[in-house]
Length: 394
Image 1 (cartoon, rainbow, N blue to C red):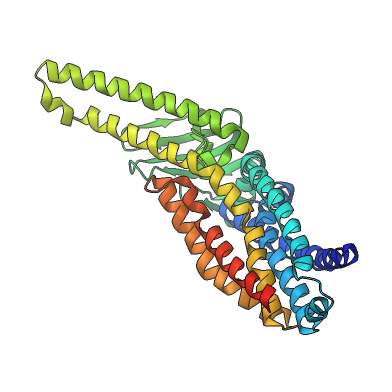
Image 2 (image 1 turned 120 degrees about the horizontal axis):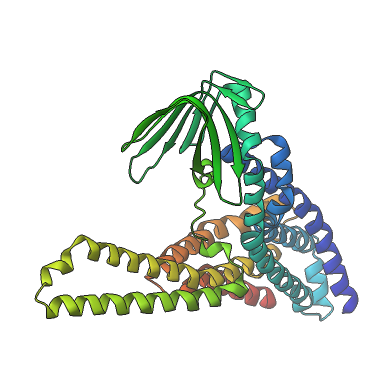
């Protein structure tokens, strides 16, 4: 029995490691190209992102790769009647399937950990690389095309001479207020300060204007722009997905305290206004702001409550993919690995991922409890149990 188990695990690992290398490399390239295009990064900056993007790439690659490996190994064994031979010796198919379940369970735990690392560590470090290369990225783009534009922040120049931008026109567009800040100058220099979170523009002989004010300057004028506009990332508040799992309970506790304090304040204000006969003030602009603030706190709380469930549900997709893939590959009895993989993965694609997306959307909005994100896994588990029972009776 031990020999059979070792044979299955070794054959599975051979395919898994080769496929994982190829798939993770492909996913890594996709993420790097996307981030480089989105942030306008140079090739050297994109290369520095590799170690921080790798956990994210592995999170996507491992579930599909283990399913591919299971389809390959069990499909080949079933087509060669090895499963039939094993049963003829009085050995249950459990002997070849259970070791794979154990391996996929271990990989699920690894994937949960990688999810945690990718979102809490990888994103932060990748963003630091982006911040450290803001100047280099902008100057490189301007030197080649004389224009840098990411949708919020844009620079047009006549020429670039060393560190100086000749005849620059800088614009910052605020989508919420529709306010456009514009700086025109004879020449200017850029300097980023990641610690303060600003891009410092030293401009000479020019003009600054927005929707409220406008002024001209002759000598060097220092103007600061938020790096969140330059990099299209809000630095004011970390998103729930950027916290490690171990830190999420503490954040939920702090958020519940803020909610309790906000509701106490609103209750006190409402009671005071009603007692003073000023009920009309309950429909005033300050109350609209308080209500919006309360809704934002609840929305953030729902996202925090969902985050841990989401990471475990995504990680344990490895196990549930195998629960479906292993018995289905045995029943298909085909050595064509791509055909077997397609027949296994296509139902997963049209069932699992839509259910996961539906559960995430409803859980983050607070309409359904956070454990709804496991709905796709449970459906796969039920289908896998039915297929497994048929394999045992086959």
